[in-house]
Image 1 (tube, helix red, strand yellow):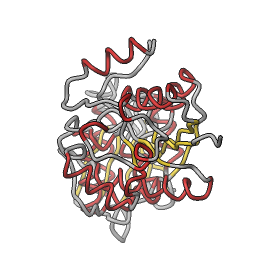
Image 2 (cartoon, one colour):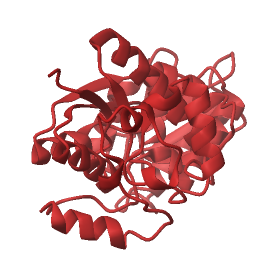
Image 3 (cartoon, one colour):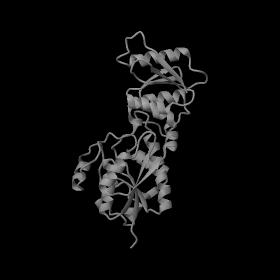
Image 4 (cartoon, one colour):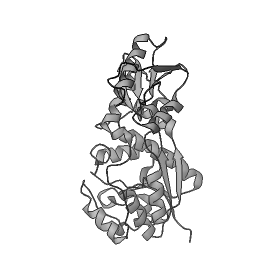
Length: 309
């Protein structure tokens, strides 16, 4: 008899770990896929996949993902997280892999009602419709609360051994983790920067002044202290490691500011409009560089290096 093969969207969170274990118990041959972008990475998924011996494929969809972050069809959550659009993109990618590599169906760890924006019944129905997976999308943790899928109808998966979990409480998931002897799993906070309110504020600001931003601009948002002067960004490093990264990310027409005679941060100036960086902006960057140096803050003899890229 042919072995049934499932492709699971695997974040490495508790829900996706449990979804995988439930189907492993039913002897489904699984392969995990996890996604990396400018806003989250694959490290959590790699660690969890190793723990449960799940083969894992990593997909970098950074450029595609940035496009939907800039203009999501279904809007944002509390921060700048386009969760519905993101989930649809992941499932469309998974569908292409399913067809190419001849998997039988796709699995996710979605729990009905766990996330108010992307996991209510209407949203899950919308995601299924937009991804065009039809009955080939199975959510084992909430399957008994949802319409029967093709894998269940055809007997590939035993519906009786699936679950009816809903809501935001994780008591049932934690109990299942104990049953399957899963000792390590992350907190439900998640690792997506788009849900972080401070980062979201920076990104919204950047998209307003420069909608054509790219990976370099996004990486800079993760670093330092940010100050906006019209359409010019001043970014002050917070430690030596950040200074090194800021220096590496500096590109043509940026200006770097650092003190010659006192230890302190490296500051980058990036102009998001045409024209040279004004003397006034450079002076403002010097003030900020000095202010964030404990030893130089109140000194009168500070000298600066101004490096134009």
